[in-house]
Length: 176
Image (cartoon, rainbow, N blue to C red; front, side, top):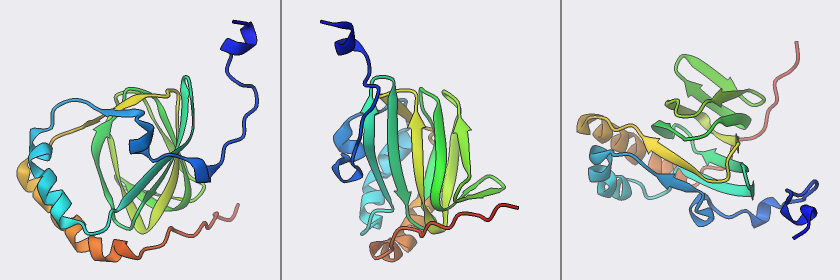
């Protein structure tokens, strides 16, 4: 095998239309224990007629991946961590992270094994996720059953809205 056969390509084109879903890609594994979340899965499935998230992986090679995520309005991403660094860039819409609201053109970095959560804004969010890994885990932090019940109710209430909700429109902020 020549040196060029073992090196990563120096130039590649990829097409978003060819991107597999995160599930089809098989690059993320669920790890850790969250027995309360596991027990709630049937309720989550019954509560949502329409999914509030979509994730694709348009590019993946050794030690690198790019995911495009679309979370619909108010989608509550559970507190979780990954076993690699992640860099996020908001293409359209907004997210609420703690007391911070981030919009198009903003982003955030999350280091390895750092737990984080956010909620999609009122128009939803389209976000790019860059990783220094081609395979990674997700460890959802479990919470009491009552808290998962509240999340199920939020998703139940949003489900009918999500059915016909379009992606957010890209609005870049004006420079000062």
